[in-house]
Structure formats: structure tokens, C-alpha cells
Amino acid sequence: MDFLSTLFFESPIYLGIFSIFLLGASLYVRRARPTTVGRWSVPAALGLILLLLGVQRIVTTERERIRTATQEFVAAVERKDLGAIRAALSPAYSADEMNADAMTEYLESVLARLRLYDSRLMRREVTVRGRDADMLLTARATVSVEGGIGDMHWGTWKIGWTKEGETWRITSLVPVVIDGVPFDSLRQLRPYVP
Image (tube, rainbow, N blue to C red; front, side, top):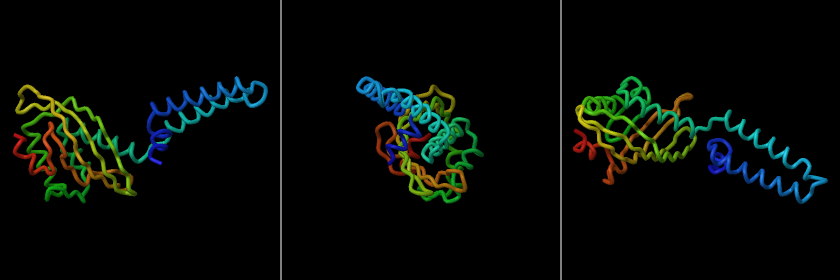
């Protein structure tokens, strides 16, 4: 079911590939049966492709909403916008013995010395379970310490989400791998963050 949701609602590339195959099949049918079904196969295929493209543009899945919320959170971290960061965290946030306020304070202390920019979100695997979701995010960013020259760093993070009203908010943020070094909590990461 996730594949079909990705194909028809989330991925323009997958839908484009599907459309090419659909058009190819309709051209084959047109050659094989030019006087019956073949007359309508190409116009029907083109109509179906346009319909699918329209539906994909209109429908927004929960995974897409979470991916958008992730991009907004990363942008808030890059801007050092503590209000937007705090708004992205759920009141039910709980990771590394921190609640949402403690996590905001932690990020404020880190961002006072670091500048993150040029972030690129690579792998964003999202598993939605009703009003909760888990994301495995791989990203890279350039990090500058106290105004110095920035270095690029790669990391994989496990992010827990919950839907509060119509908004997805973060319930946990745990590092998995940073620059090839495995982690399982922010406490382990703290000695590496200036």
C-alpha cells in the first residue's frame, strides 16, 4: 500500500515512469487492434495520465506533511529561530530525559556557538501509524563553530512525530550516526558539540 501511495500521490518521478509504460501499452493496443479498442486506447491513456497528475497535485499525504514539517524544522534551526523550533516540538516531547523546554534550552545553547547552513535532507523514510509516525532522516549540513570556517557533516537521525490537531510535531529526536560514528542519544553527542 505504501508503494501505491508513493506512486500515485507522492512521487512525480514514479508517476512519470508509470505514465510512460501506460502510454507504451496503449500504443501497443492501438497497433494490435486498430479498429476496435485501439482507437480509444491512446486518448484514454492520455486522459488517465492527466487525471493522475491532477490528483497527485491536489492530494497531500501524511508522509508529505511530515516531510514538509521536517524541512520547516531544519530551516528554523538554520535561522536559529527558537520560537519556531519550540513550536515544532510537541508538549509530549521525551528523549534523553528531556522534555520540550529542556530540548529547546539545549538547542539554544548549541546554536549560540554553532551555525548550521547548506542543509540537504537526503533519505526521509516515514512510517505513519495513525496519529504517530517515525522518521529515519539522513542529512548533511555545513557547521561553523564560533564563526570559523564551516565543515560538512553527515548524520542520520531517528525522529518521532505525533499529530496534534492538524499539525505534526516532534516527540523525540535521537542521533543514530554522525560522521560515521554511531550514537543512540544526545548525551553521547554532547562531548562532540563545542
